[in-house]
Every structure is written in structure tokens, then in C-alpha cells.
Length: 228
Image (cartoon, rainbow, N blue to C red; front, side, top):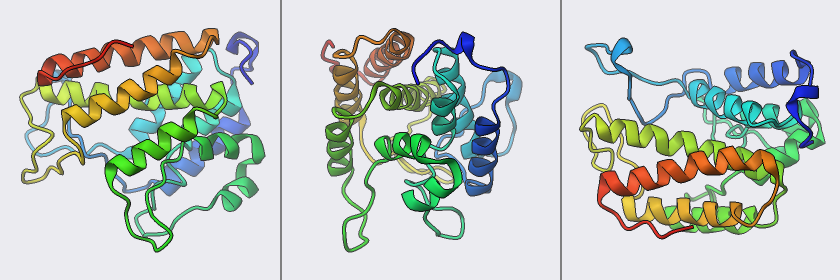
């Protein structure tokens, strides 16, 4: 699945299907961030649809040279992890019926465990440690999605911080992030450390992009950022 995207067709029914599924599942779901560039400034609070994040991640994966099944999984990378607006959760078996085993395996590989066996939400650090541990055994295709996902997440965080918005403190119309800058940098460093062990060429731009934003977050928050 990691052949050059130059050999892939310009249009993929599989990717189209993934876009439709992601758009429907995450309909009326919004990101925590509200960042907007100057041309898009609005006087009222802005809610960023989740599909914007999914599209950015999938675009990065495609531009790095990954093939349609990986791009499809990038669009769907949050579909098991996050419930829809009705509180329903997608299972891996249900997703497999919709998009097949190859895409579903990649989505499972980048799905963070949010709940314990009793249905209670796990602490942030526990979730991230489990995610990183699983990532060590995941294929390069899954790591590509993870790098693109974390890159876009921290890029959005950095853009928001540069606008003078304290994303680590709750405020009217804004939910604070679940962990502070030190913990965020720890997590990014862990993902980058795993990425540094892989030699696949298509991972390089994704790894470099995340590394740059990791360093920028550390600078903006005056946080120690160990070298990778």
C-alpha cells in the first residue's frame, strides 16, 4: 500500500466512499479550536467542523505519496474513536462491512482507547501511552496517518497560541485542551521517536512536518523539547 501515489488513479471510489462516511458520521461535530486566518476572520465565535481536520490529514497523507486505501483510512481515522452527535459509536466490525479489512485495520491502528471496560473515560496520559505502545507494532501506513493527524493537531494549536488565545485554560465558547504543554510535548516526542525508527521514504515529509510544529509548540509555551 506504500507505492508512489503517482501510479494511483486521480479518482478513487474507495476514497469517495470514505469521505461520504466521514462526513455523515461527524456531521454537526466540531473541533475544540476556533483558529481562523485573517481572510476568514469573523466577529462571532467560529466552530470548525471535524471534517475540516479529517480532510487536512487525508490531504497530507495523499501529498506524501500514500495510496487510496491509506487516504481513505485517513478520512476515517476518528470514526471508531469518536461518537457521532447521537452518542452512537462505530465498531470495527461495522466499519469492516463498509470499507473492507485493509482500511479498517489502519483505522484501528490509529484509534486511541478512550474508555475502560466499564465504559468510563480513561485519563489522558493512560490513553496516550496505550496509543504510543500500539503504534510501535503498527505498519508504516498507520504511522503515516498518525503523523499527519498529530501534525495538523499541533499546527492548529500553534496557530491559536500565536493569536494570543490560551488553549490550555477554559473560557466562554472554548474548551481547554485535556493536557498542558509539557504533556503535549511528551506525547509528540514519543510519536516522533517511533517515526525515527522507520525508513520508508513517504514518512519523511510527514515526520519533518510534525517535528517542526513540535519545536514551535515548545517555543511558544516555553517548554522543554528533547531532541528526536
